[in-house]
Image 1 (cartoon, one colour):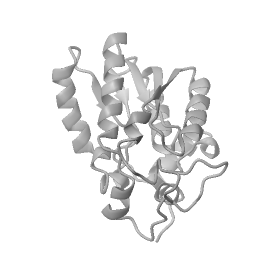
Image 2 (cartoon, rainbow, N blue to C red):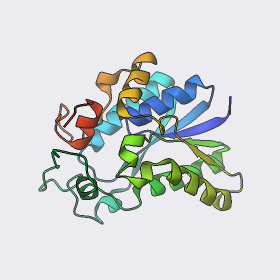
Image 3 (cartoon, rainbow, N blue to C red):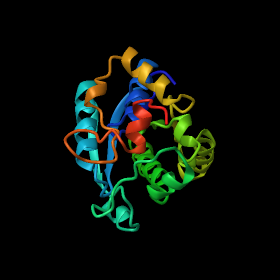
Image 4 (cartoon, one colour):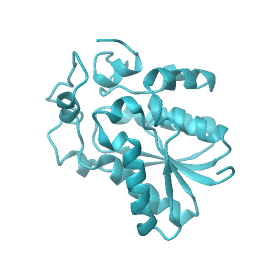
Length: 211
């Protein structure tokens, strides 16, 4: 794995940023970062944070316009007329309300096209075991399944890895601090204001607040 050329899916949030830093520490040569704008309210802040990290680590950064994806659903992540849920507990119901169909698989397949064309071996993603409970496309079984698919859909057997997949948010935050990441400049909030809302599921997980 050391010195292998790689591409990272970088949202500018906690998980993907820590995964990037961990991959670099392991010796991977991360050459490119992809950030996706699918019409989410937080797109501007995510792009800003991802661009900042890409400059920090001297990585080529690309932003993809996938706003057609957001137009497929009427979703609080995208629709400005719908408030983002402020859940009193984590559940499949609240997770379903912010679900974007096939989002992570789509992102990975776009990255796989880049990886094979440019001679990269790994796609780095930021998943975690907390969200995997209600978001199956954040899970290790999902990674294993899509890697089987990539074995057939790429000639060079591009491989997805996620250094944070077995961690919870508290562990990821601890890693971020150890790695010297500018945690205050990352963006995990579902909203796109000047400051994180502190109330959405993503904010509350990052803050490690108990319900």
